[in-house]
Image (cartoon, rainbow, N blue to C red):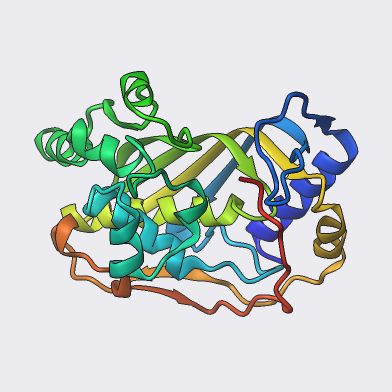
Length: 278
């Protein structure tokens, strides 16, 4: 059992046994019913990527390829246009949050572009890698006032470096306001590990530690059967890790989704089906 598997099972048990019920829930299922959830607050995990600890469970398959493509859409293309996501990357699951203009509103990639977030991050790290101001913040109220759209879930990422002997390691901390434990937890974590790896590669650094804080970690009321199924599963013996096959020093904007490879990943099957909350 990997560290991620243990954390996954511990979180599921904690939510089922100690979680409280949501009230006045915003999300709805596709049939129109309110998507209530059981949740805990203040979930935190630490993964030492440099020593092979990655935040991906083996208890069910995680669609990491499409998840990483979403990161390219947000931070490389800096786009909020659904057509770009579908035509360039063949990713369609954002359609449920689309607006009439074919975008997801002034959110995610649009916010990154509007505030030159990646440019500022790369510039700040280049001028002084040890500065403590390398922060991505997608929670921009003026953007929310500008249009409708789903408010960002994974909204803040902070980066720091550590020098050990002659090697520089890039650490990252992801803060998420809300997270679906069974569906999105490892998808979001691995997305931002990929972003961390892209920035580290840009400077020729190594990846260090990944810290993951979720404020509201929940399981929806139509997922309890799946939760029990996951608890009953025996974790795979594999040791999955994400590899970026790009030369150190490759520009952030020259890295491609196909440069990423998830190796030694043999998750338990069959895949589970989830009726997503929108």
